[in-house]
Amino acid sequence: MTVESIFDKYLKDDNSAFFYTPVIYKDSYSYIFKNPEVIIIAENQEELFNAFGLIEAQRKIGRTGYGFMKYEAGYYLEEKFLKYRKENNTGLLKFCFFNKENVIKIKSDEIDFTSGGSV
Image 1 (cartoon, rainbow, N blue to C red):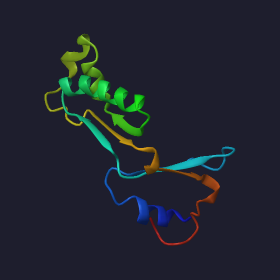
Image 2 (image 1 turned 180 degrees about the vertical axis):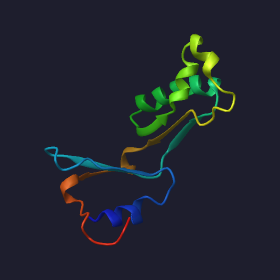
Image 3 (image 1 turned 180 degrees about the horizontal axis):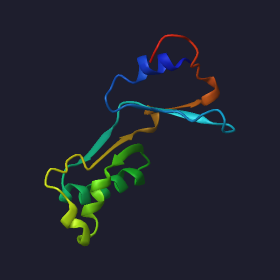
Image 4 (image 1 turned 45 degrees about the vertical axis):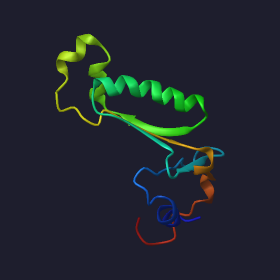
């Protein structure tokens, strides 16, 4: 499989992702996450705390996911840091969760990066 085919075939959705593990690691695998079942977004303090419960619920039912939490989200986690937050802190957290059939596992040494062209 070429890296170009991965991008062309699987990464058309904005919330799909490709995580590559270099072949320098023994028996390394890379993962394609396509078509998330659930997307959790937190834009403010209330949504941030609700998101933690929603993330845990997805984990408990066996979904796999990835996401990010901004550094600034930490200001909401302890009262002593609230004074540092800015009212325009948006996009504090975003996690995407996938059913198992939408997570593709590939041996990293089977991905061809030398096929030419640009990504």
